[in-house]
Image 1 (cartoon, rainbow, N blue to C red):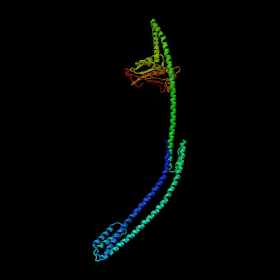
Image 2: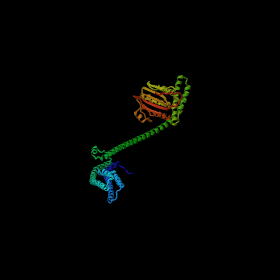
Image 3: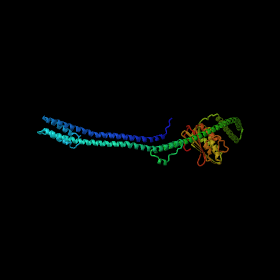
Image 4: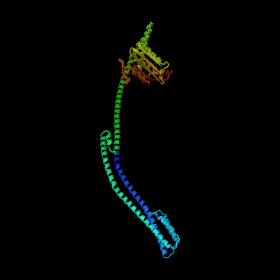
Length: 492
């Protein structure tokens, strides 16, 4: 593909000026020739008119001579012929071709006298012929003066044309030499600039060079500076684009590595889930025997207090058996049935169970509308809230508070578990929840991972953040189908 350099357009402009100057000179010469021709025609027009006027006077004189000859031969001069001569004189006097100021008046006087009745018409014709010849002589003298003026004007124009033919080429030659001198150096400078540009040297033409440059070269220099400025911008954009691409490649690589690590953790978690499911299955068999033995012992006991204690043991064994069953179901990916759950009652039961396991200076609070109900898996929700509450209680230590708040926002259930502990580690906030990653000594890193799994199975969202100035907060956003009372709140 042919490349077009912007600098060529400016360079060509230097050659148009000499060509334009030459064209102007030629046009001036042609215009001068046309003007001279026009003036010649303009001068010949009065000469031609005057020649016609003189010819008519000569014809008049000839007619008078012929009439006079008839009279001299003895032939009577007819008055009609005199009237014809009079009309011819008046016609000549009415024309505007006379050069002498007395010609028309003299012809008018002759015309009046020629028709006057006189005894000797021959003598009258002779006198009138003499006067007509005097008029003709005056007109010829004026015609010679007119021809002299025309000849002098023509000689002056000829001399002027010769001078122009000599001077204008000299002036044009000097102008061309000066223009070539002024154009050659700017062209050489532009060649150096383009060579420098090909070497990726994007320096602008300095102000000193612009001030000292020829007027014709300044537009080319300004165009070059605009071109260089645009090239500098494109070079900067190219560098920025390369830097952006490098950053994106780096981010994509890091994301790929992070996904690989997450996949590895997921595989480990799946392996742990399979092992725990197998272990839960194996524990359920001896646990069933223990439950059966405890039931028989309870029926055999007579003491009411011991029977009540045995009932508590059986209840805990049932809860353990239920947890083991849930573990096996989770490994099989068997979803739990959705039932109507009262959030207030479920949280109250959890807090009542935890109050016997937390230090006395740890306050457990709930802000939930009693009418708030949703269709949810009850065991999964209970285990999720229990994990969050246990994490909060264990992290705040011997004193503090833990709060559970829930509200319904349109078709979503929003649950927030907050505490005044030290908050989440920065690494967890930056990298997110990962299995086996924990910021607490003795932790397994599976509590929040199980919470996230429960939320994802319900197509919900999980957010973790630190409170200001102290504390942590976990927010669950779960789908909430209508199940009775609305119980909507906006300050959960």
